[in-house]
Length: 250
Image (cartoon, rainbow, N blue to C red; front, side):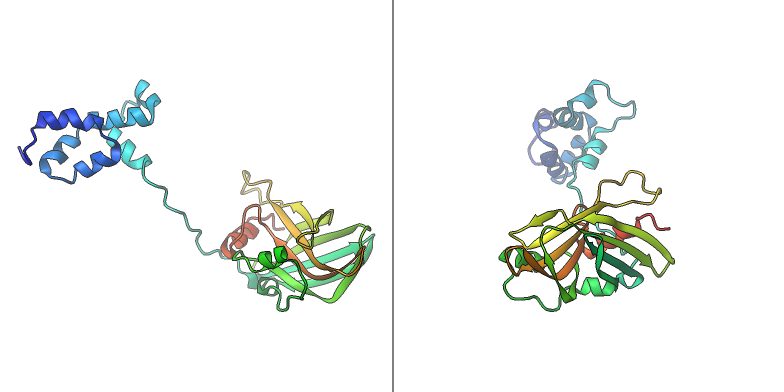
């Protein structure tokens, strides 16, 4: 008998402990460790944590292994570095005002990743906070700036090209900027992404296109930037590249 406690005392106490305490008990000495190995004690713990498992346990149930496996804190999973890079991507962005083309440009992924180089004075604090957030933001300056009268329908289409595979994907298909966030001076349009059949359980993820603007009058805005984001599912650079890699490239 080590540490002055008999086996009988330990066997009476161990069933009352929680799993964490029983794990610590196994570190005290050889006597405690050998007694604590008895799966009966771990069954008592599992019965409190998952009562149903003890009503009809698997024939090969090992309660100590069950507890130690599924009671550990989950380790954050870090995505591996994607094969796709922004250098591989070109985005083709077209916008129409009541059917008339007002913006048409092919933009490299690196330009979008570089973001705005000059932020105009007078933009709302909400927009300033968004532009300075740590998230990966894909945006570019609009030059010359677009002066648009509010009211007419503005639509946008975005295609993407992969230089590495020579394939194209549709990101946004003639979506309308039908939501105006006046507080943040942003007009937003979205489209649900189409993913490769290799990923059948991925759905309901949107690509968002935003017009960043300043008010120039009662019904007039001046667009100084555009933003593309995938905030439903991806905020970091790695997440965005993995998301784009899973699109239905043709």
